[in-house]
Amino acid sequence: MKKINLYDENDFNDLHMKRLLVHDSPYFKILNFNFKPGQELPIHSHDVEGQLSITVLEGEGEFLGKNASLPARAGDVLVCDISEPHGIRAREKMRVLVTIAPPI
Amino acid sequence: MKKINLYDENDFNDLHMKRLLVHDSPYFKILNFNFKPGQELPIHSHDVEGQLSITVLEGEGEFLGKNASLPARAGDVLVCDISEPHGIRAREKMRVLVTIAPPI
Image (tube, rainbow over all chains, first blue to last red):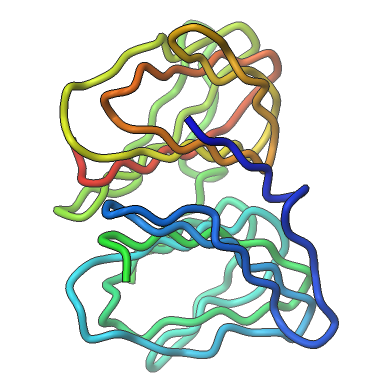
């Protein structure tokens, strides 16, 4: 058993989103991204099998997709294929948790 | 892309923890459990390969293990093997998100 607290281990940065690798194993990769207002994880995709989830822990913003964006707020869980274009843009200070399975 | 909001889709129950299946695919299974104070997911394990994460979205309680328990609070992420005994007990109203990879 391994435990970490995202609030203790990761903070915010004025220049860019702050990334924390929470866990990496053959089964999944878990990452925490913290955004200040206006910061983003640009739309991207990887041509591999698998899916990812994005859970919004705090704050508001948008999930970015290929042709549209969806509002994102605390308690939202987005699931998409890794091969599907996805990204995040923050409107407020925002903490999200991303899980990728299998890990890439 | 599929999005659900845990706060909208799941609530609390006086008699037992409230379970919501968020997503199930060949890659991972995602579940949301909501607990009232004193409710628990009893310690259990499955003799299969894989790992799970438990993220505390709200509230306080304990992660239950074989020989000990660990304090659990918002922002905590616990990772363990599916074969390792694990459980959760709530001290306050508590929302957690569980991801199991590969799904069982």
